[in-house]
Image 1 (cartoon, rainbow, N blue to C red):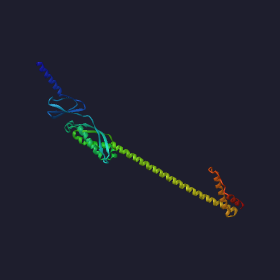
Image 2: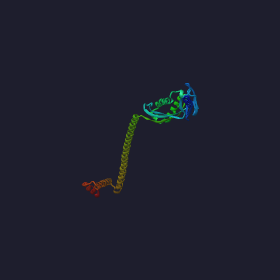
Image 3: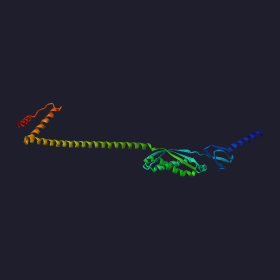
Image 4: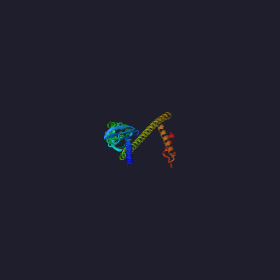
Length: 280
């Protein structure tokens, strides 16, 4: 009987000693309460408390802690639906405030991030939101830091992992981009036709100008030839008859040399005209 009582006493003493010794891992701190009231914060290492009177109420991580924010939807000021995924890194600086200032600081910070992120996105257009990640991160960190400071927590960093339009919005944007490309192609096609028409008109104008110049040169040459013949033969009509016959013969020669000519009929009066010219 005595041995049994002794054994029970020894077990109680050992259990009491074990209950009074607390080993805190590095990177953690423990908040101790005495009879339900805050007493102390245990630092990493070996600590001793009073068994049955003191108890560890909270164990907090004092290292940088990442809090992932599930994908949320925000609406920009031009009514575009955006899907945002982010992560925030926080650190507990004051375990007492983190334990008694808020019931669950992790959930509270996540809700704050989602609320403020939607508000920030709502003040931007779609293009601004897609191109301003750094600005969004800076605003979000500033707003969150002010609110979590009362909980003894500091915001180390905010990262926007992904920000993109929703599926329906992406489909609409792709259709809009396709329509814009077709529009640009139509404009370029019309511009090309316009330039081609201008070049063709300019070509015809240049050809007409060259033809006119050629006609002028030919007329000048004919006038010069007539003047030379008139000086040589001393008559007014003969030079004109000669040039007319020369051109007539040259035209018939070109016609006869054409590969498409199957049958060639020489005009009957050409011989008489030439004969009359020779007889003069």
